Length: 376
Image (cartoon, rainbow, N blue to C red; front, side, top):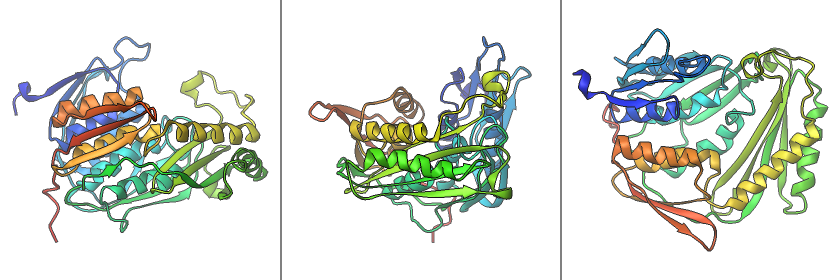
């Protein structure tokens, strides 16, 4: 493999999507100038951790990082999957950061994937493990991924800054994804949710539920929010609390929003201040209920956090037309569309629907097949 056949990319943006697409399209990449002008240049801890994770689930994958961490050479290997794998995600990003790449790559592995991830389960930056369970996994089923062998178990919670969470992810391997026509978002028929609290009073959860329900009860009767108070070893190493909500529609869409409150990680704010004022449980409940209503108002079959993943799944489908409706295109979604065109050669036709303020996208899938999976 000559040096010339590496695809050259720059900067630190969309690091995960670049690695996913590089792996699935078997395109080796070199990424240069990673935060070259920052005070702390180079890869962050979670990005190195993601590269190590890819090495764990692949065979013959080659990762080279230069001394300053500002350049990465990545040559994808064969996706193997495997059972009883364990990965420590670190404390600079939550487990949610690692789940999306694992889900997509796990589908195209040689063997089904089952992996234990340790670290932070809920924070305010990445989608929580609850959202993955309630919203992301059902999204995969739309594309023909079987429910059997697709699950996420939350064994213990971990809030920032010191984590301590533990989840078990299982992903089945498939031959190919099925194209979708998914443009009817339906009407919201029920709202479900779960609150969590670790190393704080369980009363915090009731306060969040009461505040969120105060907003939803005017709008629909079917609202159930469950509590998940963890104690002892299952509560991780730091105090924290939060809520994850999901609206289910009559046409089988799941729209979610979540947040968590905890003390800042050291690298976020420089000095860790244990006495810093945290948002009150009441405000958390009200705020996230409002965020969910905004997501629903935008329209579309997924919420904004799932846009990029939805586009990626459409592009990886068999060579058939997929047609989907989303709310306003977010910058991340647009970047993912560009990367898909770059790596897979799949172009989306984008047509705004002025009457609803939504956007309809169409594409013909790349026809990616899982050749390493033994056909049954």
